Length: 238
Image (tube, rainbow, N blue to C red; front, side):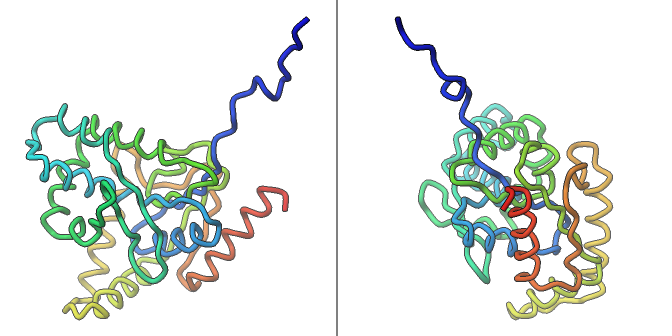
């Protein structure tokens, strides 16, 4: 007589753990997320960059930006991965080619904004993001990671900071790159972007109901990373 399958063997494998980091621009999500991924040995996702990657892939393929079906196909088939780094933006690889510098150009940013408003493309990229959930775990940086993309995440963090602190950080970043910037103008741009992100109908910027909110205004990157790791240890019972 054949043995019955054990209950544990018949269960579906539990998906890889995810830490979601949502919040406004300039709160430090990218820096914190990359350090977390490196320390944990997990994968990293910069969700905002996916729209730029899609725009670049479309341009390279000669795809018309009015061809929704073509754009959805490109978005669904992206062979993209992110390699976290300390002290700089994540390395973005498309078909194993480093495209980090290319996708951050003004032209690709403009094309990405055209892609981002198309619901079918957003849906395709949502599914693509979910496929990046691989063992041993994923740190996902974005604006709707905990509310829409990974609602069952192991740990959800909403990283905030005052508009003044975020403007000053952005100002220092651009000055370090030798760019001529105006602090007051940066602060106004952040205020306008916050209002747009919080009031949009699709995936508005807001904390998940079960997210931990961390104000990074007066914290270093290392301090925020330690707080998140502490929360993770508590969630995992360690």
